[in-house]
Length: 151
Image 1 (spheres, rainbow, N blue to C red):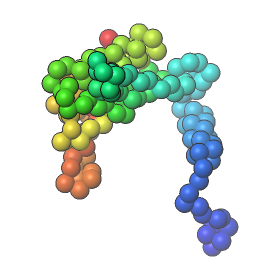
Image 2 (cartoon, rainbow, N blue to C red):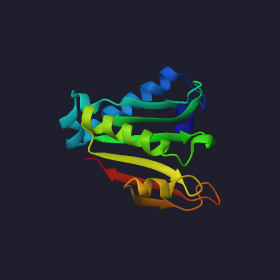
Image 3 (tube, helix red, strand yellow):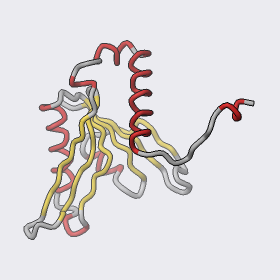
Image 4 (tube, rainbow, N blue to C red):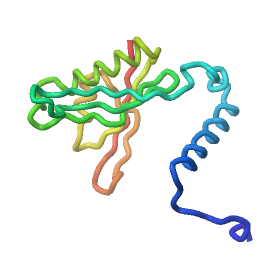
């Protein structure tokens, strides 16, 4: 009977998605003493954090896309062009994102998700620790979540 009371949709626009996100954030903030304490402060707001590296000819050599929220940096994407891998560019991009997050935004920790064929060892070398392992996500691949305390 519940299904007759609602119309379900599978495609929605950005405004509807953003509305859902705001409402979920408001519900979570109301339920959590920690999040309530942050309400109205800059630390509560999520802010994009991007770091880009261009080669001598202006081509994209690598980049990092992430965001900060409360006291955390979340690295969403980190990519280095194959021609520049092994030269320390990934470490440089990550270090700059961590510096901005810590010094400019008050972050005390960072997190990242990566697959077994991508970069778990790279992040370990940067001081990250594995806190979660999900086998077969997707099938045949293992996903790692790693975190690091920022100084």
